[in-house]
Each structure stands twice: as structure tokens, then as C-alpha cells.
Length: 100
Image (cartoon, rainbow, N blue to C red; front, side, top):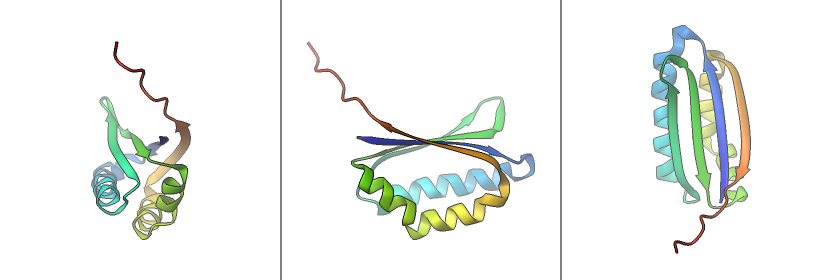
């Protein structure tokens, strides 16, 4: 499995609108992208300006397709002015050990 994590720091005056856009992005991605298996949107409890997204894809190719999808490009363009910083990391998820 291929995992992408993104941590955003959002300008304080745009937190509510960013929240709505992030939740919609997750919803659309899960609906439209066959290779996306999980898309979680999390906010730091005491600092709502910090958003963490955890996305699981079947393959890196599925993730690469996500990055060129219309809905991702639109999300990126719309939210860019609201974001003070963004950190993207990619991971290979270890498969769980069998139960004994």
C-alpha cells in the first residue's frame, strides 16, 4: 500500500473555509478514485490551524493519478492562498503480521 500524508498550517482567518474544502476534497476523492482506499482529515485539537491528511492508495500510480485529477488541482489552487505551509510525505505501508 502507498500512503501520502500532508500537514497544512492554515492562516487563522481561513480555518473554517479550509475545513470545508478539505472535507469535500476527501469525500470527492473517495467517491471518484478507485485506487484511494482511505482519506482521513484530522485537525490538531488545540490548534485548529494545523490539518493532517492521511491517504492510502493501492499503488503509487493511483496516488500519481490523484495529483493530476481535476478535483485535486482545483482544491490546490483554491486553498493555496489560505495555507501558510504544507508538508507532503510519502510512505510504504507495512502489511500487518498474521494473527497467531
